[in-house]
Image (cartoon, rainbow, N blue to C red; front, side, top):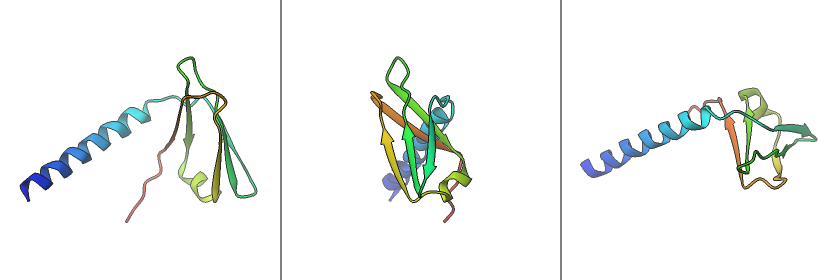
Length: 85
């Protein structure tokens, strides 16, 4: 059981570190909502990265998503929303 607890703790730490890193990314693209669909139109930087940021209120306004990568190699969507059990 000790091994599983250690693995869990490592995973929690890793996810926390990833979350902190993603929080430092500056959004460089926007999304629009129409007819229950959020459309993300990427604007990749020179490294091919496109970053979107949603707030908690945004998450209640659409039921489906669509991505236009526009040449982006990596698309990241961040949100400060918290999920509670």
